[in-house]
Length: 267
Ligand SMILES: N=Nc1ccc(S(N)(=O)=O)cc1
Ligand SMILES: [Zn+2]
Image 1 (cartoon, helix red, strand yellow):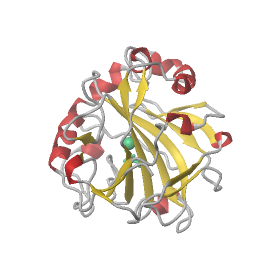
Image 2: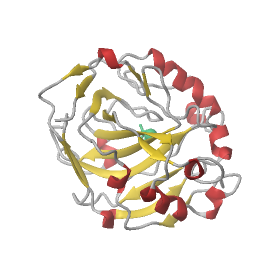
Image 3: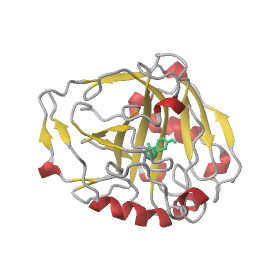
Image 4: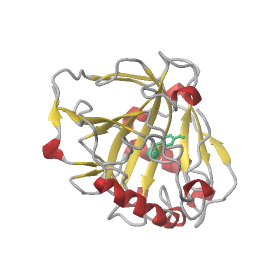
């Protein structure tokens, strides 16, 4: 999966104005207005098949981190739901804020969550690399899961424990660094009812912002404990303070309207 930097407005030049937003009529994130979502009986159940053995490493790009998967075969895949093709898992990452009042990118009726998980997949039926798929209209599928502060998430703890010392320090190192991380099944981060979701055609939420994403936003959140996401662990403040300039970017998501927001209730 291609190396990806989290571009911070005041930190990374990629966020400097003017942003070259391709197209611009299906930009993410959005505010999901629940009463405007439409039930679509043609949406099928999601088929998530992840092989923990494809988990490879945690990559820190100096601003955040992502967990990367071997996407050279169809061992960890997503299909069904709104998807016509098979998509390969290549990485997952989180978005968070400076405190637990906000942090997610999408919002539900303007309500933000403390954090949001993105499981990123690319269309392996039509393309042979993430880099090819990322510029195509039906190239990517991202599952979004909201995080709320509550009980400890046992599955997540393996990731928190594996995070390298530099992430737990008070500030991220700026250099890229990678630590080995294996046998992690990201399905443990999904909520119980994965067939209860909203879906819409959108974009990457950070550069290159390409309008290539079928978003599948889970209605059910997962719970993680405060010490898993607060303090000095998964979401160290040094990075989150870097997010502040991005919050205005998220603010505008309240005013973005999706072209067609579909919803599938649990079967
Ligand atoms: N260049 N790679 C990217 C992958 C996923 C996302 S997101 N945050 O939309 O899932 C953004 C950029
Ligand atoms: Zn993301």
